[in-house]
Image (cartoon, rainbow, N blue to C red; front, side, top):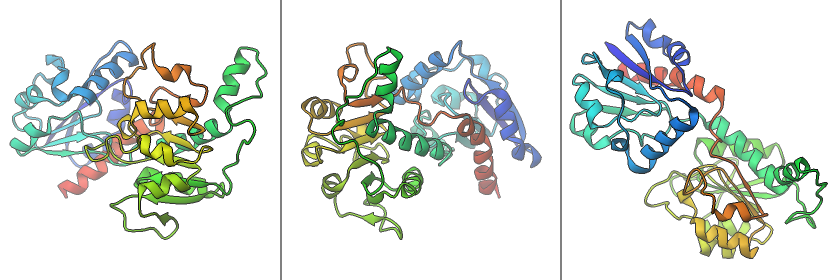
Length: 331
């Protein structure tokens, strides 16, 4: 059985080769080729285009698939697997994506040809969960804005919440979704002494955390609202002006998941009007943020450039995690 693995600047050829050792040990012939980019920024531009417009938006170099007609397993992280790729790989049986989402695969073509598409769930769950806790602390305790001010030699003491800066201990943290990442976040926050509540219509309950009956109830009770739902047509604009009206004026909202979960314009309006205390965001409708973005003008927001899942551990472990999953499938 032949496998072609497409490396990139995040999961380079050495990482990919080492991570797929288990496949080679089982007699699978693995070849690693690299989807080359002159910089990480250029790779991110291609990836963003694929995420927003689908697998057909970006074409792979022909040389990347040359002589791969016998390949039955294709493994990729960001490289698009579109109709042209499927045409070059007539014997393909499995497509492995080294992340949770499979936006870079033309699933309609895969389904038509009977090709199974497999993801790598949880591959960066810990990195996103740790980052989420960091964002909560950065916004509540003014860490990022104080650092920014001090770099400008300004000994800043005021902040949007300077009259009532809270601690996490004893505060109610509301998790929207209770998947792998959210459960890690909940475990971390229990160590702070936070009370965890969650809303997830697909989870019946939890031994340690309270499930609430509605999203309205969650946002009304929470001091921190943290989003961990998947982006689907059902969850688009899940949080909007209605929910900001219900939130405590002292509450903050954190999004390290997908930007579309929050109506961005409603969030900006709520922050500008002071309806909520603040927000911490790692994902946006337009990336990179345009120069005219209102987020640059807000004093009550912590913003980062979509880096929650980007750790060396998450990237290097992904091929190994997928190998284990594929070998279970192959029996």
